[in-house]
Image (cartoon, helix red, strand yellow):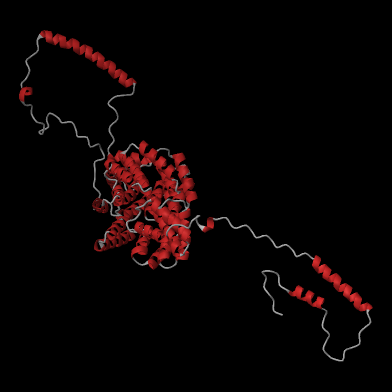
Length: 567
């Protein structure tokens, strides 16, 4: 039995009441008394006025027809609005999306081989599951999209079913599969703009910034407007270009017209404000998003984070609980559990951590891989070795985004492998993304390895980027900075210029050695000219001349500062 609510695809405008309608109230008071019959003079006057009025109305009607005006087009119903949003590449409101699903379900019951309608229904299931956190709809989406391909193969023009499968793979965090489906469509229909959003998500999940940038630029060429601005803002955000991301996100919010599209743009502005460490601005943007579209449930969790930073803890707890009720995502359970833990409410924290495990298990049954989130939880609150294994598996799947690199580096550090963890944490930071948690993890790993200068810089960057980035980790970052103390006077030693090289010693002059050689030659000549002395009776050899001994001693003496040699 279908659990999706059914809605009439037509407009919700009530019909005009008819006189025979039993629920139309009868006239009362003075309006119930019939007026007296008009006089002849009154009748002629009314006829003249009627003729003039008829002429004016006729002229107005002709002008309206010439100007293309009239009663105006019929107001679109929820199904039409959802279809228009999908055609434009924008999100539909949850109520309109519900109406579209109900309409397509009813249609395919009597038209089971309608491949386009099945593709639309399957893709709508994916979006519903993503927006409601009801992972059971991913299974229904897969079945429906396969039915669409059975009715018409992708090679025969059913590329939208392939795009739907790519969106499903992204939602399940299977980015390699999403890349394969998306690139298959791109090869066959390179100008089909609908494939580029799923390719952007796939490349981002794989950590391929170059391909993600190219896909974003191509999407902007093919589909201008708010959807392209939104994707461009996310690209700038991931590269750390905060000013460009903010300017583009503001333009998207200014140009958005539909409530769901506007709310999503305001939510993005709230996230950017939060990452900049501006919680008051973040609360204002999240509140605006919720006023614009009450179905923007992700803004409840964003609002809760910002309220924690403002120390409005009771409001933050209520916002988190509301978010989990309406959008039960496991990351919200982790955030709420950490908030409870920071408040010393360990029992409530354990309850949220248990709920997180249940959500992850349910998602796994629906084919969703939540290894990254589970590993983040295990690294800080469970088994770091298990976290390492989960993340190594992600790395082998080529899931090499900044988020995975950061989590793997931190898990290795927590498991006692800080030197290996440093490589991955540095890789996450090198992407350029301005994330306080990444800077904190890198700084703590460097501190453990006694690389104090870089550790101090990264910890300072973490608390400067967002002083309240985590209710548990932010205080630890400040404590680590206090323990490191201030840098030495003159700045870090590695920033000082190297000392100039010592001058090479000048060679000893050979003049004295030459004179000694000349004196030796003179003495040798004198010995040759003198007659040989008779041999002494003693066997003791005659002592050498004093001058010769001094010369030998001088030649054997070590240079200044050198090492002496043993005889």
